[in-house]
Length: 389
Image (cartoon, rainbow, N blue to C red; front, top):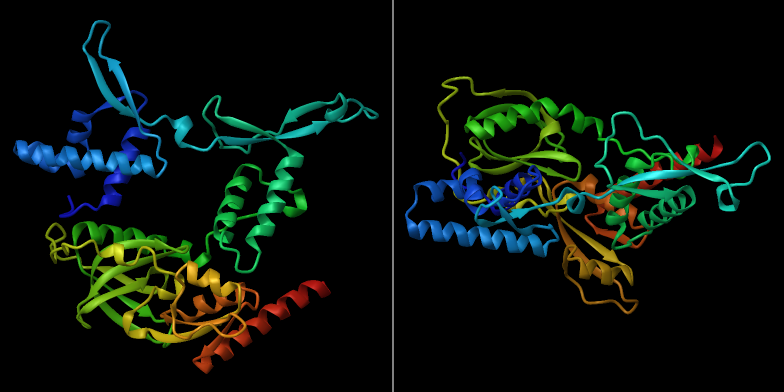
């Protein structure tokens, strides 16, 4: 059992336990079965138990505030049993309903459509997909197509503050309605190949984190383009922006580092004394410091450099509201603002700036500005090739 269990781990354990049960769960059962509570509940005194119970109550209330439907339910054990109180998460309230696409069907060759007396049939679900009975939502094809087209438009709006949410919604709706926008408008979401290739490394690193064993690997740094040998103490794995990252202590450089897993090669977990930890896990929650970072902020501290971007109005207001970078110059007469960023992955920043559709320019360093222009030319050339085809 880890030395310290974070609040997020407690929340996930509590949600998973309640979702996996059809009947209400008593407080006593939660205290005994969930690791975050059981450690102090089983071996603690009355004061420790009261503290654990308060921790549970806080977790429950905070999850409810976040929208997790934890119900308080009264029930009896046996026909004449004593009334008890437990907690329950109903799957129909927790999961979004599956979507069924309604096809309009003509009656005969000259029949009219469903809207004028025809029949609507339910499109067959793709093989392997199942749903909770009574937990499905029937969607007419026309409505599904309109939703997909609207989400596509929102996701592609330059500097739109909800573009990420629109892309997420688009992936969710097309999970069930694969071709809601027509066979030519099929939308696919694919895991990047480099992320898929990192699967085996992720499994080995997860085991090393759990057993607290040191690991060695060759790391290909994106900034300097060099491969270096690393020997680290793995603290935890983090999945951010479609990539796995390892937070670890670099023993040769004597500092905490962040490594992208798909840039590792020749990974080896220390094979000696497999049941004996090589190091003591840190007391602090090390992953929390990296959890909300932007893609260009994920990387090694010693490979960071400052970059200044000028945002045009009104995108300058959007950048301020969302906390992108730090303001370093007062607003210009045209409402533009210069903000400074600490960059560890320049290509990630360049792709983000390019997605803003000309609403932001890189002022420094000049090398990064030149790279942005080169990337823009490459993207334009790709679209020209598609147009010629």
